Image (cartoon, rainbow, N blue to C red; front, side, top):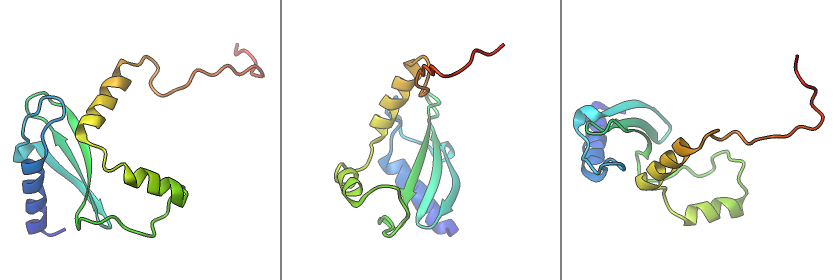
Length: 118
């Protein structure tokens, strides 16, 4: 990505994104370019007010790549595509939810065949 395109990307992020936690606009210093793969850029936005970090994947040409490898069936891909993009607010809400959970994502398993450890 050229320096000019990176500056344009950061300018757009500043203009269109706000912190999902406190609704603060991002400053230039709050946005860190992490890298790019194909048509996607990865950036970290860290709010200067509440310090909430956010990882964003941005399509730099406005399109998603077709023909990509996926474990989704065509019907599943269509289903999720019709739901639209995940919003920053939804990500923040999910973060708050898992932060309140006491075991994270690990499901409690009862393995009847396991032997007790000594």
